Amino acid sequence: MEPVSKGRAARFLRTTGQHASIEPDAFTEGSYVLSIGGAEQSHVNLVRPEEIFYEYLRRIGHVVDLAAPAGEPITALHLGAGALTLARYIQATRPGSLQYAVELERELLDFVLRQLPLPEGTDLHTIIGDARDALTGLNPGLRFDVVILDIFSGPEAPAHLACAEFYGELRERLAPQGILIVNVGDEPGLTLVRSQVAAMRRAMGAVAAVAEAGMFEGRYPGNIILAGTQEAWPAGWSEELAMRGPHPARVLAGVDLDVLAP
Figure (cartoon, helix red, strand yellow):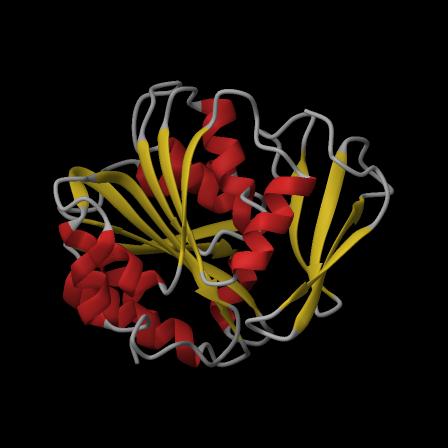
């Protein structure tokens, strides 16, 4: 799928008052980088959408891989759309999947879809609005194999989303074997990560944390992926995720996750 513009494109985002830009990745042919306010936010490989560049998104992709047998279509909900990197990944690895994406910034979603078209055959339904509000507007009978919350990008997070009550609402929308995946970007000390571990533990049957091994020391900023299941954390998943990397990778589940207790 060819981009609309092969050079740099920009768009003003009225909700945040920032500028978004999409420009070619000088090092990877067929790839593009979305930046917002001058900071890189997403990377898209239009030629090979199954190849994810950012490490934390690759880790999320590996968790998604465990949601169902390889190649089997799933139903996915993306809360925070970005450049739809994971939606493209799911379509590439699980053709025929039904996907929904919620994005607060209308101009951003329009800009991304216009400049970086989705793979042919992608069944993606887009919703503009707040993640929690949008959840109540979805078909009440719809259940998801995967829910991905990728909104938290620093030590501050929207209180109505970063709480056990919202995670409980998300759990109710999961299929019996569904997975809730939350990306938490945090500063040294991991204050937000710790609070979200506690919140997810109150709402989910089991919770695990996946990240670059050094992130758990809390000495520098970065991303930790939290994954919640309705039943016990499946046997073998920790070893599988650690093996898949990116390396060095570490997975904390069960009592091992207590090191991130508040």
